[in-house]
Length: 427
Ligand SMILES: *Cc1c(COP(=O)(O)O)cnc(C)c1O
Image 1: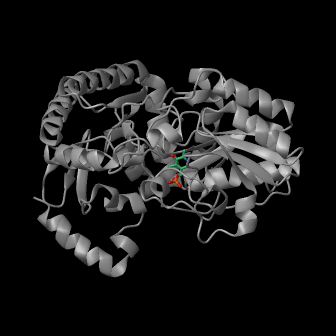
Image 2: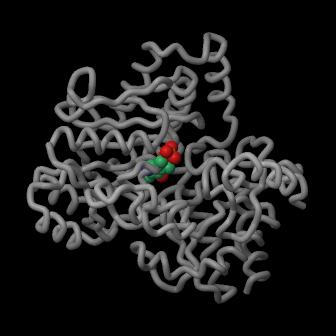
């Protein structure tokens, strides 16, 4: 079934570490070899062996409109005809920046970069420059890309592969990152009290999406807002996943909490490599060339990426697919929950809008500790069974699944059926 993929993987391993360009793609934690993908359209993805799958990975979040959306493809191909990069300013950068600032009232000014990693890394640098302080608070299980400061108790692949420490990160850098418990305001308070006047920023995923999906507890985000304001700390929402996903205006719109800075990525690139960070004008005025904090990029604001992002965001703004996305995702979540009860397999189904995760545990998952009670071996069995049923999920217990506007009621029905069969197999 995975013959061609297996051949390609053997070849890939000769030339690339682990045969992949990003660790979780290697399917290690589900004891499998990775699928190689040939093409994708709408809600479907096709591997090198020609098998079709209903896709819930969505390229790890960006593809809220499904694969190869005709308007996005058109925007990219039209743009490419005029050249793929100039390293100079373009009108389309203004359009996307203007749109972002209109949709995110907390963002007065925004800078485009090439990835979510760059967005988070740069936001923290600006916050340090603005406050003149060194330390930052991040939360266990949250992922903000792979820059040094964030690879401490990080989520995503680092969590999946059980890479606990930070080889390659200097002790000095690591000591400036202080770890608080997600959804635990007291731990934040304690850190602030123990480090008076030293915390530049609190960076948080307003819905944790890299340790599975963990919604913010009531008052958690508001509590962070207050603690930050009271202590002269910059509050950074890393909305690389949640931006344009849980609502057009992201988690800050959904929960009504205004951060000082925001990181964006994934969806704003329409499937091309993009990130962005922005925030209050007085903070963003620190960024070079207006201010002294340096941050740059050869391909930043790339015209193809801007065209794809602008097309995607315009569709989201005009069509407001969020109620429909929520309906589809809730259909799926309900079906999965009912099935799990029927088979007597304890599953916690966490969901915020169209981002969701099923944890194989009987404990409600509200933070990293409860997420870690999941039976990852059982998840691996489940993953394998789902794949053979034609469902492509993230190959890790600790990643989110995404419903797109391309998913139909029939896709959802098929997925619930597959889930039923998979539980039969593993139960
Ligand atoms: C994916 C992700 C990043 C990193 O984005 P890349 O484009 O992979 O560098 C940062 N923060 C969050 C919350 C993410 O989910």
